[in-house]
Structures are given as structure tokens and as C-alpha cells.
Length: 366
Image (cartoon, rainbow, N blue to C red):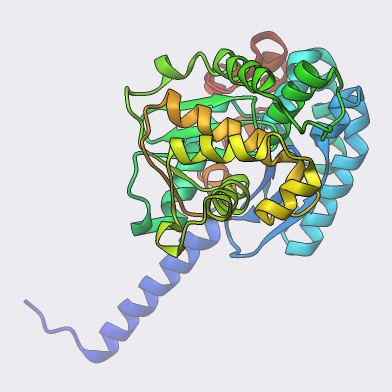
């Protein structure tokens, strides 16, 4: 075998470096937008930076605004996020529309399809309406990345503004019943108003019973979607900064109970808080305005979720999660980004099932 000289080794190393650089240069860059109920976050495959901005999409839809009125504000926010992140517009740009966009789709598919086409025309961002199960998969991936060894349960509980997911690697339950959406359900049922937040407290025992019955009805698909007992880690702020500290303060628990909730403790806290005014609730729990308006409805939501999933304990580990890692790695989504006209046609016909269909079967696809 011939001896490789130092000069030859240097030459081969240079060739390897050049090949690696060429391969990296050929990798297409991607920009993704996580389009939630109350804001949008952006990230890119070639950057560690993320940017975010508020946009109350859910509130606009609840106020009766048609999808067409979302186009201008959405395009403006997308443009701001691109500039803040210094993300390149020549990258493949994909938006993942979550619960608020699913709501818009359910109300008027044709109007939403037209609005999404206009958003792409004005911004270059191809927006998909992400199915709830796929959003759950994004959440579980993000939780694994963020929590690492701190994630000891099979599922994570992520309560957003418009929807919630109990997301696992192999099974997910998702429903349009996030913090604001569930609070609105209670306001409509018990106070006959669409205002969010509404003056929900004080609640008497009969009203609490009505609230629990309503929640059980809204969550009736949970048993078929998940295994018998589903261990959960709650990762979102309604639990970590609302429910957990309120339970600890009302019941006088010490720091030893910092990251654990039990259904009986939540029920006891509900019994103490429900008869109070909001001012008295703040005094009792330390939960400030405006967040205190959602505390009782959050307590009822978490109590119901734990009982229906058979959980004796709920671990709490706050993580600032986004759907960006999942979106950026989603090959099917970026295949649809290239076939967005075809996707919009199927979205109008199939609803969120359009995502699961095959982009390779679009007309003109080789």
C-alpha cells in the first residue's frame, strides 16, 4: 500500500472540506412561522435566532371578522418578523396555522382559502392549516428538545389560547379548548355573554356542577384518543404560573411540592376560590390582573383533564415551546409549500385532511 505523504493528506483534507462546504451550501434554507391564536413566531433552518410578535387572530375571529380582514395584519407581522430575524426571503417560507386558523376554516373554507392565497401573494409565505394531531406531534418534539432528562412522562399537556394538546410520541388528544376558548364556553353557558374574559366569579355549587358537566361533554373524545392512564407533564404558563402557585398558596404548601399537582388539591382550591370576587381571588392566590380572570376556569380545566386521564399526579415543568422545530423538520409540509395552489384546492375540499394527502399526486407533479 503506498504511503500517503503529508502534502497528499493536506490535499485530501482540503477536498473533504470543500465537498462539505458545497453540500452545506446546496442545502435549501427554510423559514417557518408558528401562527398561533395570539401571536406568530419565526425561525430559520440556518439561524439559531427566533422572533415573535403579537397578533390576536382568535379575538378577531370571535369578533366576527372574516378571514379577508386577517390578511393585512398577518402580512405586516410576517414582514416584521423576517426583518427582525434577518431571515432571507429567498428561503422556502412556510406558515403553520394552528387553532385560530382551524376555526376560520370551519366557519368559511372558501373565504379562508382566498385569504391564504393573498397572504402568499403579498408575503411569499405559504400558510398551511395544521391538523390538531400534527400540532401535537410538533409539541412533543419541542418538549423533548427543551426538557431533555426532565421529561419523565409519556405525554405533555400544552394549553394554548385556542386549543390544548395532550401530546405523545404515539398518541395525541387535541381539542379547540385552550385557556381563552374554555373560559369563553363558561362565559356563554353561565353568564350568557361572549365577552372574554367575563365576570365569571363568584360561582355557586350548582354553577360549578354545570361547569364540570360541560367540560366532561367537551372532552368526551379523550378516552378513545389516549391510553387508559396517560402520565402528563404540564409545560404551559396557565399551569406553571397560574394553577400551580395558586394551589400552593391557597393550601399552604411548601417548596417541596413545587412541581406536582394532585386532583384533590385542585378541587380543594376550586372550592375556596369559586365563591370569591376577582379582587379577593388575587388576595388569596397572588394571581394578578388580568390573568386572575382565567384562574378559576384554568383550575376546572386541569382538574377535569387529570380525572379523565386517570392521573393521580401532574408534573409541572414550564418550557417556552414553539412549533418551529417541528415545522422546520416537516418534509410533508415543505412539499406542500412547493405545491401551495394544489394544497389550497384540497384544503377547500378536504379541510385539515388536505395536509395528510400526498403532494406528489398534484397535477403536473413529476
